[in-house]
Image 1 (cartoon, rainbow, N blue to C red):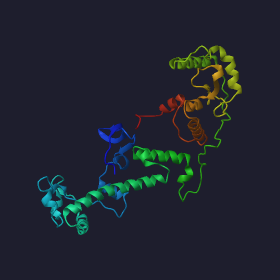
Image 2: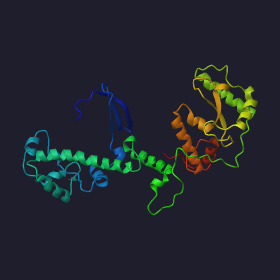
Image 3: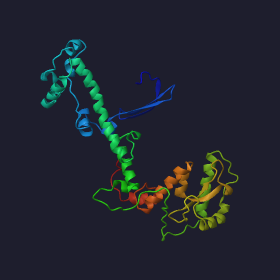
Image 4: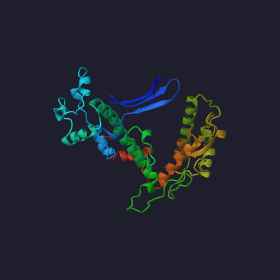
Length: 335
C-alpha cells in the first residue's frame, strides 16, 4: 500500500474543464504514477451501466441509501442491526427510488451475513471499488488479444484507431472464421516491398529545381548555425544531374522518378550539405530518416512501401493530390 507520496504533477491533460489524465512523479524516488479518468475508456456512463456492459455477469453493483445519513445521525443509523426499509432508498434529489424491487431483494440477501449496517457499508465501499476494476481488467484483456495496450492510450477511441491500424498491417490476425481468404500477407520488416511503377518517368534534374534545392539547403544550415562555405551550389548542377540519373536512393535503393524525386541526405548531421557529406536519397525516405534511430527510420520506410504496394490508405503528403481531392470535398472538415 502506498502510504506516503511526495511528488509533483508532471503532466496534466484537461479538456473542456474535465480532467482526463494526471502523471505524478515522486521527487525522491522518481517513480511515476499515472491517473486516468475511467470515462476515457468506457465513455460517459454510470458505474451500474459500466458493470453491466463490461463486467462479469456474476458481479453487480450494490445499493446504499446515502440521503438518510448525515453528520448528526450517522452513528445511530449505522449501528442498527436490521436492514434498511425500501422507503429509505427513495431519493429526494432524483424524485424516485434509487433501486428497483429486484435490487432491493438482492440487498436484503446480501445484508443477512452482516451484524449491522456499518459492516454492510464497509462491504459496499470495497465492492464498489472491485466492480469498477473488473470491467477495466476485462477491457485490457480484450485488447491484449490484439496486441493493444489499453493503458498506453488516453481513450477508447485511440485504442480503436490503433486496432484499425494494426488490422491494416496484419490482416491475418483479423480474419473471421467464415472468411478464409487472405487478401495480402502480413507486414514483415525484413521483406522487400519496393513496387516500382513501370510507367513512371525517370527524374531529370532541371537547373531551376536544383537552384531552389541549394537555396533551401543553405538556409537550413544557416538556421542551424553551421558554416555554409562548402555547401553545394547551383554550379554543381551537371554533376548532380548525372548522379541522380545513374544512382539510386542510398536508403531504400529505389530509382528516382517524378513520383519519387531525389534529395540529398547528410551522412553526418553535424556537418553541412557538402559534396563529401551527402548521398542521394528519395524525399520520402529522407523525411522518415531525419535524426531518428536507424531501426525506427527503416520501419517507417518499410511501412510506407507496404502501404503503397497494397494500395492502403495513408497520410496525404503530396500537395498536388491534396488539391485534387479538396476540389471534390464539400462542407467543412470533420474531427
